[in-house]
Image (cartoon, rainbow, N blue to C red; front, top):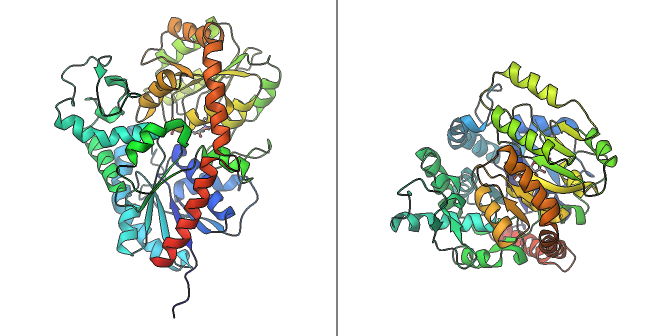
Length: 473
Ligand code: UDP
């Protein structure tokens, strides 16, 4: 009789901050539950995480490994050149993944692959090696369901839009909650988006259905209607979010106040925590547009003046590479001007965001509505002003403002008077009503990761199922 195989899970994230962080949380949780796990980054990102070391007690069951993404070291891997990265993932990185999985580096043999929902190379190679694959889409359920509706929208002639009016209502298949405008659809639906990107992300979405199960970083009480739509496509769904909160509850996440956050690719400037200590309770606006979004100098100045004019202290994350279309020297000199510390404002390259949001001085979050940031805002109970740019951000923003009613949507505008008005509405005029909804949603998120919560239970189910499929594969 054959020896039972030891379960060994390979976790394969898309090489970007917003994917690495939740997938590393998952890897840590699986290892804490007793599964052997290999987390496979690209060399490029592996080098960025490693020098700062693991942020919580290392587990002998979790290994951090890396393979090449096929691009030269000095490639910027930025949004503007994403097509080069995507092509390289499908070719060079896929070959490197196959080689890794059949090599001694993957010993004991990998018995289950958890592939990012936009890394179908993980499903392809798992199928070649007869290993079961699970898909983990790092988006919200509302966004993922919209992706699956896109072919029907096209078939019905609703897409591409016959004109450019993005504010027109869009009647889709999203049910009562999905009162959408065109602008709320994933950005691949906008005509300005390159057709290659549209095809790439649609193909990746269809490929996810070849996986034997789906993991989502959301929780049942937050997105129940969208999850029931998705259940018509995926028979086995595990909603285990907010993962960063589950990781904290399970003692594998960061929150010591001394170490780096889980999976942070950038060095965090912790001096902003000291600055926050000097601010009044719930007075500060925290501003961050995530790891990829860039802004023009004009937009930057409009935000800056709007924030100054509203008279509130603010803490703003402005990455070194955040300014669009400027020569490097000019951008650097502007940033260093803005970074001069003052009592009322603080600009940093990168902040410990989860901790910032949990700080008693923070009262509002001006965000690009990336899904991790949205969940982090919910867990911390901080209402949001949404300035969505790409991908799932527009639909997240719609849900934040119209379905959960925990924030305001700025749409595409960012003139100084709109910024000022939005901050005043969020933190004064509409504060009570928005905080009421936020308190409810935030409590639900906390319940979901409690000992009897849906996400905790779903994680236990996932671990059991992984053990089972590893035996039968
Ligand atoms: N983040 C951070 N420090 C910062 C800005 C962002 O740690 O100064 C983290 C944030 O906590 C979140 C991630 O970066 O987990 C960004 O992910 P999100 O999905 O919100 O946006 P993306 O970067 O993918 O656009």
